[in-house]
Amino acid sequence: MKTTIAIIGAGPGLGLASALRFGAEGFNVALLSRSQDHVDALAAELAGAGVIARGYATDVRDQQSLTSALTHAADELGLIEILQYSPVPSKEYLRPVLETTFEELRSALEFSALGAAAAMNAVLPGMRALGRGTALFINGSSAVRPNHNYAGTSAAFAAESAYAQMLHDALAPEGIHVAQLIIPLGIGGGNPAHEPAALSETLWRIYSDGTGFRTFVTPLD
Image (tube, rainbow, N blue to C red; front, top):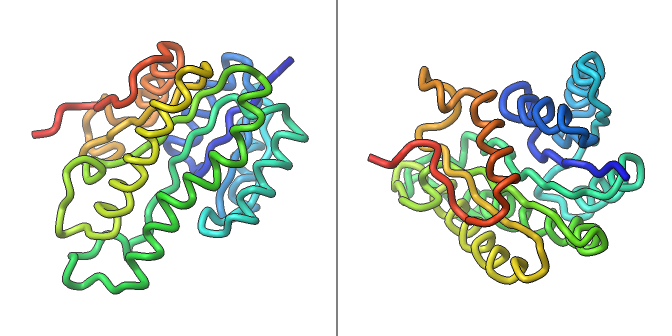
């Protein structure tokens, strides 16, 4: 029985690279982002590479929308064995703490921590039915080292990180692996280890290893 990797925050960089890497291993691919046209274009590109993929429009800050998209993906493509939670933060989450409003902070927490919880709640029953599963949470360095110049992501990634760590500890006895990949300084930037294809290979190794919680692409300074 084929199973599915659901990529939340699918785009032409890491999302597409992960879809190609895991698709090459036989997984069906569910692509989730806010734009249906966007994910449909990615699905068409993947089809050209021989990967079975479908796109689903959703907003991670809308629990009902996200749950519905993941449910439809599992119905159409097969149970979700792998969840990749990697939506790209909005610019208002990257403002200094003294310039960040209450609403911006709340939105950041909804985007990262609460969105992650909604996604896990949606896919966990399927993972339990399979008797296995992997959740991959992708964050920047502010998840472990708060930066007052990036208040929204610092607060929200830290909350997401704590949630993921607790899931890792609680679900390991069930054979469900929860892991976090920290990408200091973001994707690309001239460092070969930070390029999407290299990151997707790192994610594949994390999935294949199936044990540890946190991996740093490169060490923090």
